[in-house]
Image (cartoon, rainbow, N blue to C red):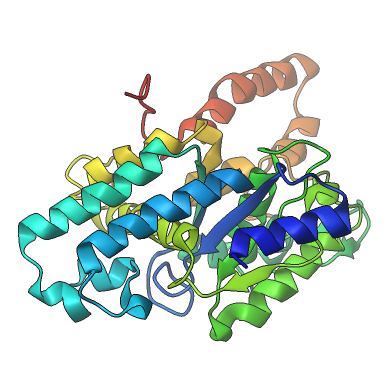
Amino acid sequence: MTLRSWIADLVQAIHGATMDSPFMIFRSFMDEAGIGTGDAYLSIAGYIAQANEWDLFEKDWKFVLQRYMGDLPENEQYFHSKEFYENRKHYRTWKKSKKESFENALFGIVRDSNVSLYSCSLQREVFLSLTEDERRLLTGGIHNGMKWVEWGAPTKPYFLPLQFCIIQAANFVRDTDKIFPVMSRQEQYKMHALELYEQMLNSHPSLKCRPKLADDMVFSDPTKVAALQAADLAVYWLSQLENWKAKMNTTQSDGFEGRWRIFRLLDNVRSHGDLKVFNFEGFMLALGGCNRYIKTSFQTRDQLLPSLPVAQRKEVLGVMRRVNLRRFLDHETLALPASRD
C-alpha cells in the first residue's frame, strides 16, 4: 500500500473526508536549515496537493530517478539536496551536463504538477534577542491583559515557522477537508516536532483551522517519498537564499548564484503571503499590535497610541495600514511571474 493510499484511507475512515480531499505533505528542513547548526536562518517549506495529484507526481519523479540512477540499487535511487549539491556519493562521478539535465528534470516535474509551495524562514539571532514576552506571543502564547493563559514556547524558535506552515497549508483546503502533515523521519527531532504540533492542536482558544488538522503528524522515510524530496529541494534553496542575504547584509537577491532556481520555485507559489520571512523588520511588524501589558523591546502600536491625540492616532494607524502591512507582505519576497508557460 502506498503512502498516499493509507493516508487517504485514514482520512476517509476516521475523519469523514472524501478520497478526493486535499491533504498536506511537507518537509521541515531540520538539519540543513538551522536546527542544531550555525545557520543564520531556520527554514521550513512544503508542498500541498490533492491525493490523486501526488500519485501522478510520485510516478513522474520516480521515472526521472530511474532514468538517471538506473545503474544503482533501488534503495539508492532518491534525491537529497546536500548530497547532490555537495557532490557526495554517486554524484561525484556525474558529468556537469548530466547533473544539469537531472536538476532541470526535477524542477520541471514540480513546475508541471498541480502542487503549491509555502515556506517560512526565521532569523534565529533576532528571535533570541526579543523579550521573553515577545517570544511567548510569537510561539502560541496568549495574554488576556492580566496574565499569560497560554505560555507558548519562548525557547523554541522552530515553533513559529512550523506553526506558520501548518496554518498556511490549511488555508489551501476546504473546511470539510483534513490535512495530514507528513514530515521527514529524523529521530533526533521527531519528539520535538510532535510536542509542538500537539501544542497547536490543544491551544485555547482553538486555532481557527483546527477542524482541518488531523490528530496525528506522520513521519516517513524521505528516500522513499517523492514529495518529501521535492520539499527538500525547495527548502534547500530558500534557506540558501536567506543565509546568503544575511551574510551579504542585503535584502536583494541580485548576485545570488541560485537566483534562477528561486524563480523556478516561484512557479508553484499561489501568493506572496505563502512565503514568509521573519527577520528584524518582519518581527517588528508582526509584533506591532502587541497590547500594552506585554513587555516588548520597542514601543508597539497599542503602547504608543493612547498618549497621542485622536486625530494623530488615526493618521498613524492609516500610515501603518497603507505602508507597513504592505511592506511586511512584500518584504523579502521576489516578484512572482505574471504567468506560467
